[in-house]
Image (cartoon, rainbow, N blue to C red; front, side, top):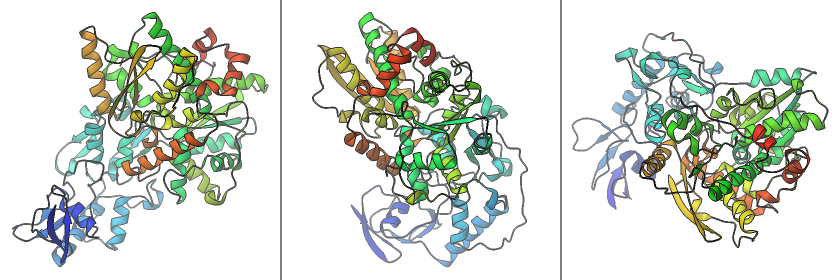
Length: 573
C-alpha cells in the first residue's frame, strides 16, 4: 500500500493504482471520455488532467501511477477551464441532434456537457458530413459522432483480436474505419457489437428492426411468433431501473403479449433441444473416432470469426444450429403444421442479447424451413425501446407464462447465457445419456465465471473427457492456436470446446443494456445460475416438451429430419 493526498484528502491505495482510480477511492470523480474500467487506458481525451506537485506539466490521471507521498489537485481553476475548453472543442465538431440520437440519455459526452453546464460554444461549428455505414448486418457506423476516444479500437484489437477497425487518416480528417476504406459489411467484422458496448457516443449502434416489427404486428394477415433468449431474462430489467441479474422473464412474456405478439415461446426450449443434438454429436464422435475436439456453434460472432481466421478447423465445429435458428426452423415447420398456419404468414421474431444474431438470421443457410427461419432479431435494448414506446410500466407489469409446447425449459438451458453454461449443460446430459447413471452433482463450478480460458475433465465410463471453455475472441484465438498446433503434431488436447464471442458469454452481448461492464456481466451470470438452481428440472434430456417434439416430429436426436432442419454447414471466408 502507498499513501497519497488527493484534494487535501489523504488515502491509502494499492501500489500500481492509477491516480484516476485512487481519486475514485477518495470520493472524487475525475471526468474522462476515453477511459473505461474494462479496457487498457489510452490517455486519449485529456479530460482527466490533474495537477501533481513536482510535475512541470499537468498529467493524465488515467495513465499516471499513484506513488508514495503524491500530492494531487483535481479541481483547480486551470483544470476547470481546460476541461470546458476540451469539451467545447469536441462539441464544436459534434452533431446537435441529441434528441434524435439512439444514445440519447446514455451518451457519455452528453452527460459531461450537462455536468459542466456547456450552454454555449466559443468555436464555430464544423460537421464532417460523412455518410452512414449501414452495410454490416448488425452494426451502424456514424463517424460524424466519433470523438476519437479509441475504445472501439481497443476492444476490437485487444479483447476480440478481430482488428476490423483502426484509426485512419491524419489530423482533423482522422476517422475510425475498416482498413483500405472498405465498408463494415465487407470487412472482417464479426458483428459482435462490443464496439457498440464501449462507444461513449452514438458513433456505433445496432441496426434497428423496431419499425419492421411494428409493421408486422399491425398487419392482420401476419402471425407474429416471438422467442426470448436466456441472457435477456436477467438483463432487460436494467433498462427500467432494476438491478443487474434480476430475473424478469415472466414480465417479458407479459410485455410481449401486451405489444401484440400472437405466440410467445422461449429460446431456452431450443437450448435444451441443442444439447440433445450436440450431445449426441459429441458421443458419436467419441465412439466412432470422429473429428475432435468438437467445438460449440451457438455463438454467431465466433462462427464468423472461425470462418475468417480458422477455416482449417471448421470440421471441428458442431453442425448444430444455434438455439435461435433451431426454434426459428421449428416454428415455421412443426408449429405451422400443428396450428394450421401458412408459414408464409408467420413472422418469426427473436429477442436476443446479441447484434451478431442479426447477421446469423440473415445467413443464406438459415432457410431449411423453406423460408427465412428467423425474420427479425431485436436486441435487449430494442425490446426496451418498444416497451417504452407502448407506454408499458415494466417494473409493475404482472408476470405471465409463455405459450405451451415450445417453451418448457430446464436449468441447463438457462445457463446457456453464461460462459461455460453450454459446456456444463452438455456434460450433464452427455454423462447420463452415455452411462445411464445419475450425476451426483450437477454443478461444474470449474467451468463458471468470466475468466478467459477454463479447463476441466470429466470421467465418462472410464474415458477422461477433457473440455475447455473460452470467452472473448482473443481467448478463443489462444485456444484455437493450441488446437491447430496440436493437430499438426497429431495430438488432441481436448475433446470438447465451448467458445463464446463476448466476455462473460451472451450476458455480455453487444445488444445488452448499457453500461455493459464486466461487473454487471458477473451479476447477470449470478442471476442465471440462481434460476438454474431453483428450477425443478436441471437436465436437458429431461425436458418433457423436447422429448414430445422428438416423438411427434423429429423422431430422435441426430435423425435424418433433425439433420435437415437443425444442422447446418459453414463457409471459409
